[in-house]
Length: 261
Image (cartoon, rainbow, N blue to C red; front, side, top):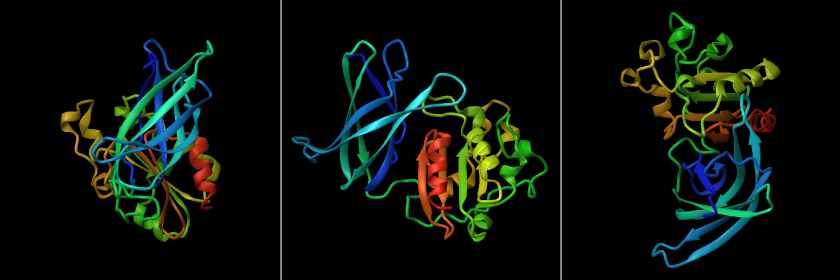
């Protein structure tokens, strides 16, 4: 409708308050209006009724490196089933534009949920492999991000930020430079938290641009990830305090980290 399209970035949703994110485009450009109005609806099982739930503002969050960005908000899903959101913006010409996204909300999401214990994964570290090229497909190779396992981080009594993503294969509209943001966060809060990057793929050095050779990381499987870029913030007790599907900005992650520091 109205030439506006939404690309959903956070489809792994369960019953509770959740971060909801999407990219907005028109036929010829990315939409960068400062905010969008989001209204959520629950759809009855027979499809006959659309029950209005809440209306909120989604904030446009510009991404580093280029003109891309993502709208995010928080919505509460109080029952599993079929839901939709109606998204409206006012464009530069003062015209109101609308579009919809439909999705399923599960009782429990596939990836580790907020409030659940973090999985004590024994991910590979620099100590356990010969070279950093065995740990990331990315060109940014900061050894600090490969020093500890998630298991040891949980036991350390410090908060932890874990990014699971494969930088070289970040090619869709909702995937961004997450490891660079993790490094920026680590540089600011070094010693106050653990910062860990786990590549989505277990054999970065063997892939060489050919994804048919790729094996998904066991840690990714343990955490139940259904899409290729995730960030988890874990509190001092080892509980997941926040989770971010698709790209999350520095501001989003800093706020989540400050909430558990």
